Image (tube, rainbow, N blue to C red):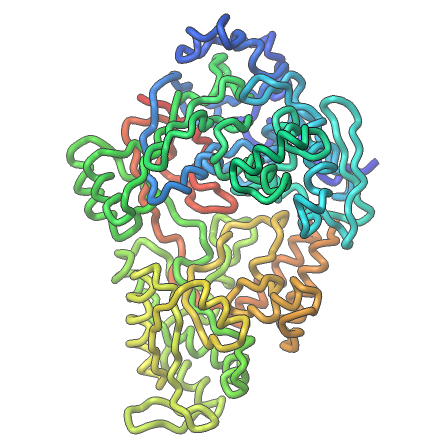
Amino acid sequence: MSLGLRLSSTIVSIALLTFTALGTAASALDLKETPGLAERVGKDLPPVAERVPAEPLVVDLEAAGREIGTSGGEINTLIGRSKDVRLINVWGYARLVGYTEDLVLVPDLLKDLVSEDDRRFTLHLREGHKWSDGAPFTSEDIRFWYEDIALNQELQPAGLPAFMLAGGKPPVFEVIDETTVRFAWDAPNPLFAPELAKSRPPFIYRPAHYLKQFHAKYGDMDEIAELAAARKLRNWASLFNKMDDMYDARNPDLPSLQPWLRLTDDGERRFVLERNPYYHRVDTAGNQLPYIDRVIMTVADGKIIPAKTQAGESDLQARNIGFSDITILKQGEKSGKFKTYLWPISKGSEISILPNLTVADPVWRKVLRDTRFRRALSLGIDRDMINKVLYLGFGKPGNDTVLSKSPLYKSHYHEAYASYDPDKANALLDEMGLTERRSDGTRLLPDGRPLEIIIEASGESQEQLDALELVSETWRGIGVRLFAKPSQRDIMRERALSGLLVMSVWSGFENGIPTSEMPPEDFVPVRGDFLSWARWGDYYETDGLTGEKPDWPPAVRLIELYDSWLVSTSRAERERIWHEILEIHAEETIHIGLVSEVRQPVVVKNLGNVPKEGIYGWDPGAHFGIHRMDEFFVK
């Protein structure tokens, strides 16, 4: 039997030293009782040896260059709105499988994940693993999700999500024993494992022992109807979905497997997240993680969070502060209260200009789809100036593409047509026949209109508008006028889908550090919410019901490559596909990126094991999650 992927204890210990001794039995460890939980033992908690799994995940911090921490204390952090309490489930980053800092996918909640040619995935749970309320975490929790939630049309009217389909077909699901399940597809499904490791994962498991009381198949319908009516909800499905809140942290009664839990409905301004006493990770000294007893998230006006951070009101802060705050934060370091680390942001570019290749205007469509035009615009930008003015030279001028940390990186992808060369830009525009000019030097479009580009922005980033002002200065030198138009993201997306949007500015590719095993969906026209080709993406998502069928050869080829990736069965095949996709982007200048690897300030106050050099991103990354926030401790 050929194993296409095996995330086992042996492989994990080779791939990353912090994940050693995965198979170590709890009985063989010198487990120490967590001081903050000691008074509860024998009352409402069993001792630690009975709380952790029979084979917990043991992390070797010293081998990874970190410290064995001390348990206790709290982390105070600031959030800009109450719904950001859900970030605790991002930063905690307990996943069935998760990414290491080296972008290797390894078991976490799972003891093992065995893949056979990306068609059959066998999931092995940890014997004795428990939910935060002490109930067993077993195969029944995965079966309940799949058969009673995912396949229930009242709960999931849209049907199974894309990562659960291969060749358009669902898997055959099998419960093998109390700690083992299997999903088997006829066709390869390389989407499955990476999806489980996302910052917002699908949670293909649910606390069945708790949620069944709200389910029509298991609960008392009279009680369910009464509960739904009391909450002014229409039916049992609405009630169930409200109680089934694995991500948003709005139901304090819902059991969890994350390191910190919301245990009380304590208002909308201050949230106290307490440690999970049944958490599955321990260090080599026998201390159960997380080290931190509680995380306190306090809501503050986003505009004053930098000032409050500088005043020492946060122990760990990256949210709601940015590069423009670095100077004031560095000044605040002089007080000795905190340190400011500068982590490169993992987006393909901090700012990217997006020509809309599905614009409805026939003149603009022809111009924007001409490769020479997009190259000319890119060559007409002085990225070094933008980097110096906006980022003090800390960023890397270049295209919106994969970053140097990605194993797929090639310097050509980053540098192609990204140097400032106005002479070459002018020559390309002349070659297109755009030689007629107004008296002020502005070129004319083929139909006589001035070559004036309205670039729409979400209005959420002054930095983007400042960058466009700098781009405007150099584009004048090639006969192109730029006008920035602040808008709103929803309006921009509607205009893109209707074909009215000509060009926009946005942040670059969310995942600038992909591996070949991560799906390339951001780089191909398969989603309707991408402003550079919304109508093609809409066509793909709706199987041709709406949108526009791609008729531009590079777009057609990108979709072919994506469909090939979806049925690929080897790393080599996926690497080949990825590189062709990236080559098309480099040669076609589909996105016009400006500067990448801009630094995200991360303020740290008296905390250990927070890396001085890290990466900051959403997927992969989960902000602090990939750096294992459960290993942070109060010094």
